[in-house]
Image (cartoon, rainbow, N blue to C red; front, side, top):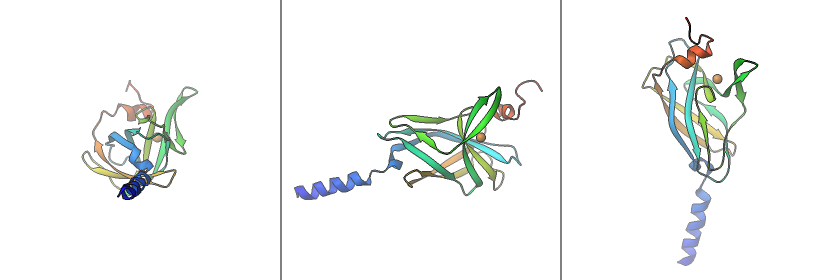
Length: 154
Ligand SMILES: [Cu+2]
């Protein structure tokens, strides 16, 4: 009997995978005007595990492609720098937010409106995958206007 428990314990410990250590909070995709060719996704990703986790690829049936970006000011210009991966530190978090890291959703298959859900499929560096559903939300469009170089004025 004791041996059986030991075996079960071993099996359980081998079942713990990196994907189980990630928690996603407040995931959201701001609604974009009809005809927009890109959208952005934001969220907070928490890693409860003792090892860093790297997201190396993201796909969605609703978009042609998805890139990982970091918004940064370079020589006075706001730029979006493509990232090869998103790293969530051990026992830490990575925040995707306007003006920082974000997911760039490229070429939507149609116009997605508030309340619709987008399926995202994350691939980790160890080939595990995580599925996440993110809702389209109406938000103030300030960030979009700034990105287009029309902050204030107008
Ligand atoms: Cu971007």
